[in-house]
Image (cartoon, rainbow, N blue to C red):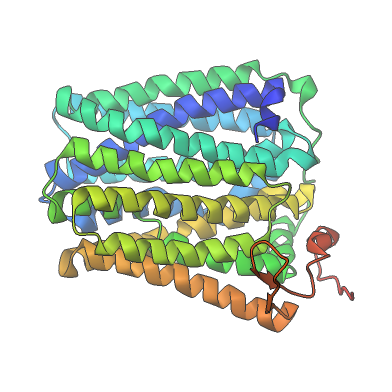
Length: 436
């Protein structure tokens, strides 16, 4: 489960990312809280707009962000983007401490963070492949997810306490300090031990090459459809937890932060289970999407605060199983020279739907209540899984077989059971015809 941590470079990366992610979750929690309670009168649409501004640039900058990640030194690029995000966090903290913050200013900082994050995300995802061998990429991706969601256990709960004790401004300032740890880790990485990664040459058509490659891979396209539907309508956890805590159950900042931390319990468990698998499988991602939908449905029906909180563990487990499996599948089956561009498409699809989904889910929450917003999330997961299953039935002749000797008794099978590695052969920009 933890084999990637035996490498010095990955250990540094993991520690730096864990500390930085704690600060990031603290800032996200504080940002959503001040928008919901201090700068508006519990306006879920305003929270959705904030999320849209923060994640929308990943879609708009898609044509260039992935190419930058494939062309430049990713370690140096990450040091630049992490420094810029620290400066933006500092500015947000200062306006809060000075008492001059207005909603439009928070929107502006969210947009600035979104632009920098759009450049940072594909480089950060692809940089993992330089820290470990190709065989260890799925494990490293899963541990990254565990780090991110382990930070969610600590960050939101800590932010909720600090907001109540010292105010949101100091939460932003603490986040700035966590970026220093990440920058130190990047500085200390032994460049001589990094895995060689080919850089894209400067020539015409490089951006189109990334899109052509994705279009030639129907398996990746299906993964992207799943990620788009769930990411757009299902992963708006800030809206779900904030509105359920305040509107539905009448709770405060501490209880709101606790919900995010409880959600992370399931997310960490899902990431660690993924780390145990030798290789990512598409079937796991499909089943996780369907299970995510049903978990959200159950959460939306919970009658009280604590029963809702417990149900979030299943929501977190299913969502992280889906995202970790999808991320590792895309990375491990993509040729290295195009990995940055393909991961930029993946990250844009994952976060790019937020400008549409978050305000829409916020509107549903305002008009019909937060339970109906969770209903939208449930539909997104179930629909995504059914679409992917339909594709597998048509293209891979999926069938359900009852086997008394198998564990579990019911298992999904298709003609490609013994050729899961077929995607690695699709290395060309144009589609490759494969016959088994």
